[in-house]
View 1 (cartoon, rainbow, N blue to C red):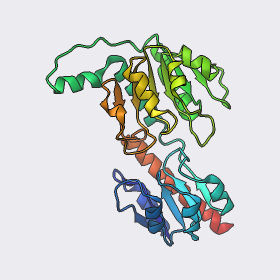
View 2 (view 1 turned 135 degrees about the horizontal axis):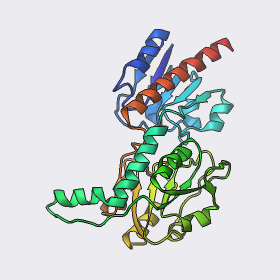
View 3 (view 1 turned 60 degrees about the horizontal axis):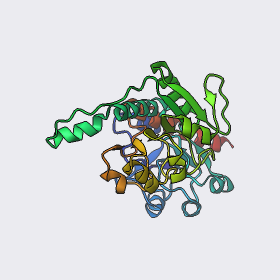
View 4 (view 1 turned 180 degrees about the vertical axis):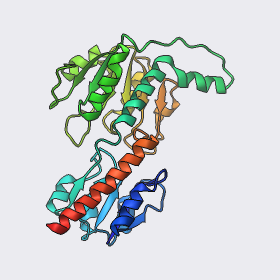
Length: 305
């Protein structure tokens, strides 16, 4: 029995996930490219595999049709945007993910980026390295209003992290209910928030596509954070509202096309990171271990069935 592991840095910090496979007598092949795979590369790597410990490569109907032996997709992460769930169901392929592993890592990154934006730390660091000694006036996070789009596991945890710092929190989510924080319609939330933080999933259907009209409905001088999904903000529109000063700043970890090479990289009031929401060592180890445990459990269930 053989499986494929497609994430580019799997088991870099701990052999524990691979030890689970060895103990179960399961062989594996690793991603040889050190990056996200294309459809064709995915098909090539997964030949003869009954399961995949999946990253963000496209797992489309075409890919599944080319892999008749594939029975299990175990995502190393929360998002399922890259998996054609309908196609998997039609072909009897079980799909699992690791919703708990990345939560704290994403929460801490969100908080860190918000503080960085408030105090313009990254901007002054860049200036100082280029020979400019300039003390920029920042803002306090305390007393600000945080609007969260998407109030699932991570959105709720973000609210719980910000609230004790004196931040007023409200959210929008079409399905979530919460008695501790105020729920608002999107239109109201955009005009209310000083900071807008996106924690929604396109796959779940709870996230709109944020256009320039949405961004200009936000307060002048407010901030945007996106550590959720690429493709939920119009990146050119975001550039426009940042370039003309309508928004004070943004921190973006996810993009429509990755690696990102677009115009946001030319702006000083933007922090850009390369899709690192889960990239805290402890979180990665847990995610990878959970991914393999889910995979082994699904294979065992399939054999019994």
